[in-house]
Image (tube, rainbow, N blue to C red; front, top):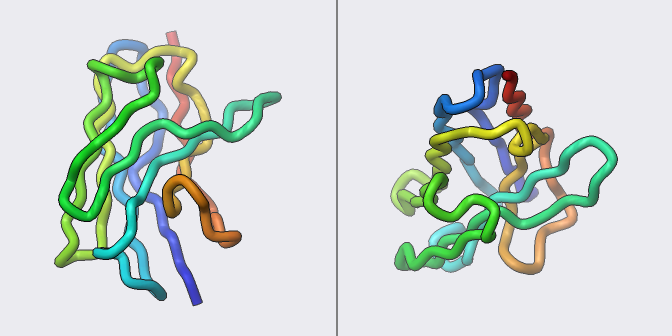
Length: 115
């Protein structure tokens, strides 16, 4: 069974930072491009960032220069360092296969940015 567990969300003031972690199991993590997704209230889920087997990375325009994605294949773990957080970053953050996600999304981790 595919499991995707996201951790590290919380309440943070605008301009602050958070570091999210995603621990995966049930598939060959080190052979998959993985990504972070988020869904804000009233909006569709969107892609935020992705990282390949060898840690090539990509970012949505909205987070370039502020977020950094990385992975540790030995730990089946992907990270998202989030700096200079903005109110618009408030969302439930998920990790999954990129770009074609598994049907299992997990519970995600909530990031709330306040003023």
